[in-house]
Length: 584
Image (tube, rainbow, N blue to C red; front, side, top):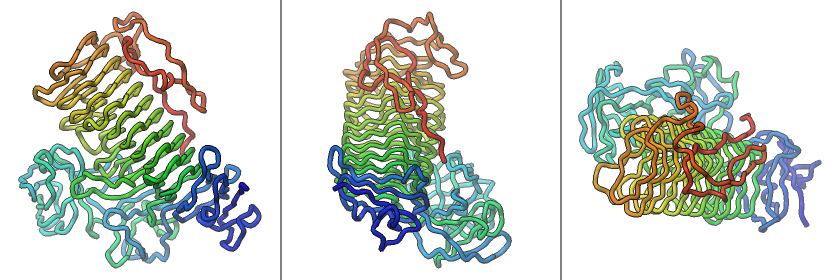
């Protein structure tokens, strides 16, 4: 018999879980919920990780977790800190009896993250940190000495600090340890992953890890003995505020459970985790803020897979949700047949590592109708195959790194994927620059059609060998290149570059079919204001095909995913901004 279970912050573990006598925790309800049951959660804040032990039954007996009667429900991964004592000036101390590890601790004042003590001091804008700049550098494969006139501290001041640096080409931000310092210079050890990532003049960096760096409002430092020192943003007593410290990674752990609905819940300082045994986990209309926290790793590569919402099973769905503020990914997809639909994902990958707003592995996954912005590295990373990346808007990416993509693929493992009807803009970075559509390191057998890029260093890049790729009907506006490649005589056999609009220099590999492209920036409605729709009378306009409409639940209409076609004349893409609810 199907049942309804009820949870309230005023409930008790000894209650039977009815509306009149609810459980006290969501976990208590999860323990008894069976296929077809619904867990109704009364409004309030729940400090717990809900581990789902049971599975629903496909197709219509899912176990559902949702707020009761539309009440506001938050699962909070942080716990309060109390017992504040004034230490000196505006700095107060209290005991924090747990430690998530260097770089992983996170402190909130009135539900907003404050900064671990650092130099130079930064604003609370995670995507646009304040950094210092190396004037000169002398480096080996294991250590470097840098100069910077802003380093005015006395000799040995920085010894033992952690340096966080976008070394060399700045592909990722990595960490090292300061071993010596003086006025205007410091020496540090680091891990070199390639000759292209050797510290150099012009690289940006910041320093953490010393209590002496706690010197401005909105900063904190946790000592090894568990003493937390805090200077609130208002420079007042923390007892006047809600001060919390991150205590748990996950709000929901759905490992090994299948056919689960999670609807309408707010997540704070935690994320949702699944594994390969999880099937058909559906997550809808959630908000998730501050999903993960970690500092730059020794190499910057190999980021934690559980930095964002993790969809690792088969047939999962994340839809109509707001995902914001994550040191790592916003969403990590590594299963089969999963869909990420109509979400707003922003201010992610702020640790500057190998993360993205949406990072995709596995196969046959779909990422569509999402609005993505403020990414430390790439907007969408595709390491899977035979998937769809369609109707997304991606902008303001590469904010902490270089040589990245609005949509980025790597290697032949992404073969069979179609990238279509996406709008990508605002990706200007140093070094190799930001690329709108980046098929990197031998990407193979992909279809790229009906996308539009602008205000990016390079609109399209097919790097190294590029076999059997089809690039048609795109509007490719770049500030330096419309199309680029790595220097060298790479083979592009079987690739088709046709019916595209280019406004800048184009560089191609060998043996590709390159035909019927328009190489002029004219013919747009108003290119100066970023409107690259083709104007009436443009030479690029020709007969097209009818594409049946797709209408989302808020009435926004775009062409249907199932009707994607290439081979018609180019036109500006049809993506629309998702009509998502306002963020709370």
